Image 1: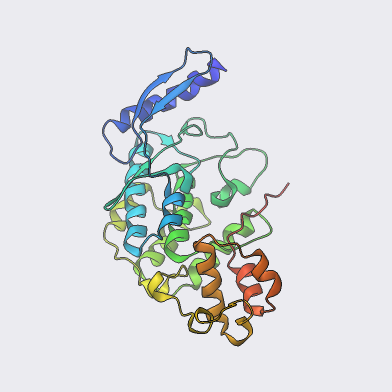
Image 2: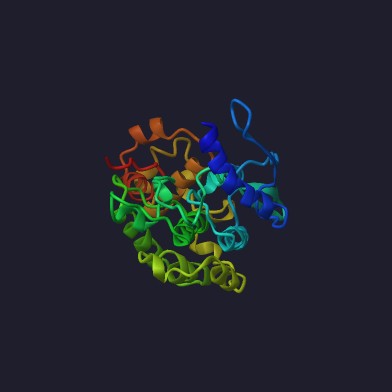
Length: 297
């Protein structure tokens, strides 16, 4: 246990040094390795992580772009110091302030110096495609972090990731198809050209991504799958005493938007969807659901 903690501490010490200079990395106060249970004392951020904040209030288009730029800034810092994060996901990006939005990277427990990048780790939903290419030796490179961050930003800027019954290269290809299905705008074009690419060598390094991201403009709000409060077209359902019973007379777009709003506001859909006989409900839950896919054996 102590030897493992010492190895992790060698990487964490690199991050400790970076956190003193870069505002986008969670400040660490001390690493206690010699205790019976090794501990890392960290800065406390009461606003939680990206997912916590998105549930409280949807990220705007400009905030999605800010997430991209600040996260790339942090990645540039750790990558140039020879560290790969290996587990980029919303839960590991904390929110220091919301207005203005300021983020900090955390949880470098799975991080490794670039000389030792073969241990299988991370979160399936955000795995880079190359992680699935072999079951023998897995090489994590800085390009893995670029893919994972691209998925996080796409999820908040353009709505839920596709639902899939499988995890693997097909899952990654499905994400790319969803990216390519969007009408062209600065952000989605950048994600497709620089970050969400199957071949890792074709992804741009963090520093180049960051420089290009600073030149982007936020996407049009009307193109976002996750609707804002001002964009809910729920005329039929909004006035109905029982919206689920009124679904057969509503348009598929209206039903899908209504379901999205209910999900966002944390309402229980089980009873309603069990009594509603609408193809639009089934279409939304099957094709646009946010349920976490089960990993393959």
